[in-house]
Length: 134
Image (tube, rainbow, N blue to C red; front, side):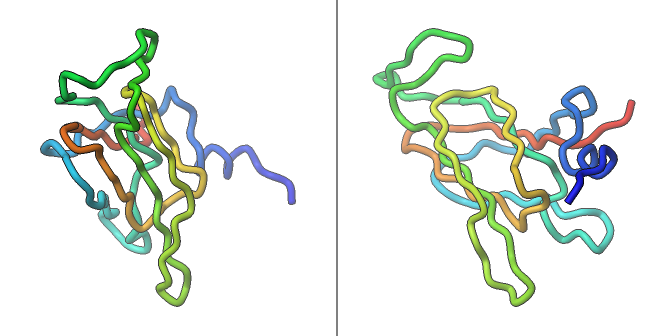
């Protein structure tokens, strides 16, 4: 199967056409993030990815200086959850993160939700990564 540039751009737009959209509040523990489309047929997460920053990190958590700083502990685990035609949910990908400020674009577009697991004591601020035409 040959990929077309238009399809590839729709599924994975260039970084220059992306912007961050704040998800209200701060997050701890575990939970799910959703961003439904304003109109059908897309009940899935209407975004291309996530980025985050650590609002609070416990004092004893060590890290290596760098760009980005790398924490000694897993700070955050994120997974995309999709549904098949029968409603069965599956985790299509997951990642453990030890840094902040990365732009994470999921490989398979339009998950039904994004699940997060945050290390105890860590507080996170999330932003959706959405397509934006200036």
